[in-house]
Amino acid sequence: MEEFQYRGGALFCEEVPLADLAERYGTPLYVYSEKSIQDRFRALDEAYASIPHLICYAMKANDNLSIVRLLAGLGAGADIVSGGELFRARQAGVPGSRIIFAGVGKTRAEIAQAIDEDVLLFNVESPAELEAIAAVGKEKGRTARIAVRVNPDVDPQTHPYISTGLKKNKFGIGADHVLEVYRRARDEAFLEPVGIQMHIGSQLVHVQPIVDAVGRVADLVQRLRDEGVALRYFDVGGGLGIRYRDEAPEGPSELAERVLPTIRDLGVTLLCEPGRFIVGNAGALVTRVVYRKDNGAKTFVIVDAAMNDLIRPSLYDAHHEIWSVEWRDEREIVDVVGPICESGDFFAHDRSLPVSGSGDLLAIMSAGAYGFAMASTYNARPRPSEVLVTGCQHRLIRRRETYQDLIRAEEGL
Ligand SMILES: *Cc1c(COP(=O)(O)O)cnc(C)c1O
Picture 1 (cartoon, rainbow, N blue to C red):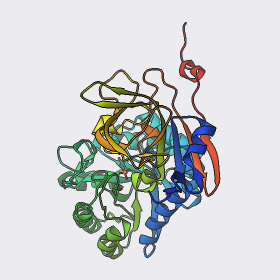
Picture 2: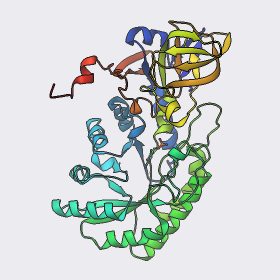
Picture 3: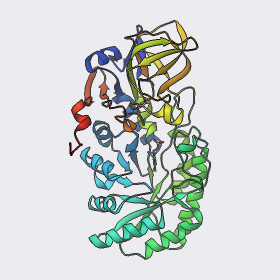
Picture 4: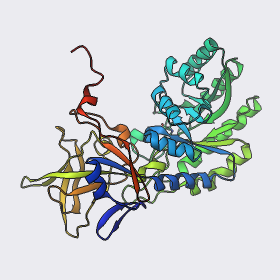
């Protein structure tokens, strides 16, 4: 969290005290550092600089239009998983030629929308989906470019919910069926096989499983070449991990060093789909303590953010560091919880944290990825505001929802 630092006892994002932002925009509040996003994007871009490449930002990590636009301005494309994300990517100025469409359940309507936008390629996850793309292409008289998502059957050693490259996962097509899917695509007039893709999981702190998978997929590229299918794109997926607690994740340079020789030899363009790596450590969720409560056995710090705003602790038992916005030397063991009527509504259990009282501000760190993007209005809680900080400037990039927003789509009263 390089862009979140204490100065003179106050926690800053870049040049702006978080307390000022909380005062100005209210809490709970997502705060993002523009510099952090830029630095992460550039680290990837530089790691791959020696070969042709396109970084397709995985929008599901954080699809705020200002953030997607910022990345598009740096040269990023987008990795999308729904028609809604396609709409958002286009609204944010990402051209179709830099969009790749992933996901196991693309509907015909979504496929049609993506063909109309002339996306760079579809990552195909099943023979049935391939047939659907061919049929929609035929209806429109347009050829769709495709890549097959290979399930390389490697264990990424991450949380089971975010592991995707094992045979037992629903993703991709097993190596023994990949060739026949490409043959079918090669022989179908409205399909053009142009690439191959893999993505084995998320929050990977070691690159070895990715390297192993790249080796397996590279063998397939060679075999396809022998069969007259010459691919132009090799997509290594996303999944690079970040530091939430004390991890020391390997990053783009370690990955590049070990996979670029293989990809260079194949003479293909490298695609990648990072989400968390780019935005995860660029954001914090600022929240205010409402009450303290001591039940004899435990002390609870009840804050105004909840699992509807940031669900990762509840969903994955994920760890997020919690910092006090005003520095405190004294610490105590507490649970930090939200106001929602679920015991799963917590941010920390039995954690040693700076002592805080009603009205104090806390920052839940590393909340830039899968934070706001997974927020809901559960318990009729309007979703929080989002603010982007650049140096000493800050701007609202999403206003807090209102009660009117909560009921806007409802009819028939
Ligand atoms: C979720 C996902 C990503 C992004 O994962 P990160 O861990 O955020 O980098 C990339 N590609 C696919 C296919 C995904 O499902």
